[in-house]
Length: 258
Image 1 (cartoon, rainbow, N blue to C red):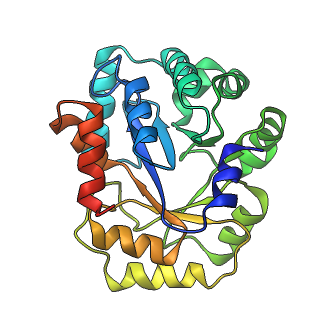
Image 2: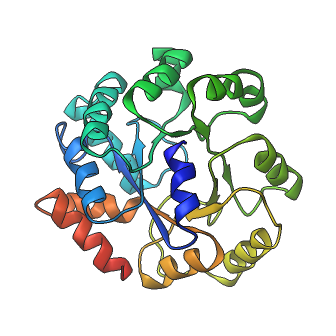
Image 3: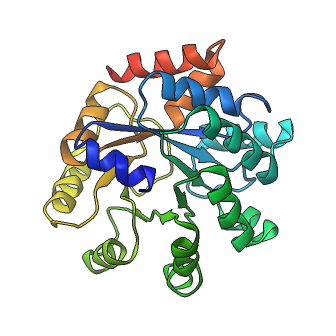
């Protein structure tokens, strides 16, 4: 069974998925970061492919991509590191998050093949058009045993949400607002209305809420209206400010009250 499916089968609520940019804060840090997350009970890790123009990401994650690229991180090196991390962390689900450009340069089927070889369970490509997914990528997901995880926002139509629910797999990534990634003190009433609306749609797939999770309040709201939360910018800041990956994870968990 795909590790994402196994996670959702054994855990109903309060799932924590953490985003980390490969090659940040140092070229050799990726395996240790993943190990530290797994050792402290984080449920899933989203491994970011550094890219020079990450359109959905705010300044914190953009900065981490710039640093990782300057450090020499490449998609090929990322797969090597993830393969080693999988050897050390056999059970945690790994999700690859990256934009089309670096993947097209490597070759899409090569990327999917390397995902399977490295032990990656799902993939997020924010700039992948849905029609292209249906035509070219869905067959590759089936061939290589990968879940394609799609994002929805407050502006996504109910028809589109149901289409994603029926044609994709793994889970649905609920973007909390229409803006880019970043931390927020709290979710406003419009965001909460959106969470309630999606919760009331009786979708087949489970949902995780990301963008803006930065404290016990926002983490708790995400877990109240979905199966859990995805945290990125806050963890990147922890990695930058702390002296070790273990300290960064401990700081993250303390910050969200977990």
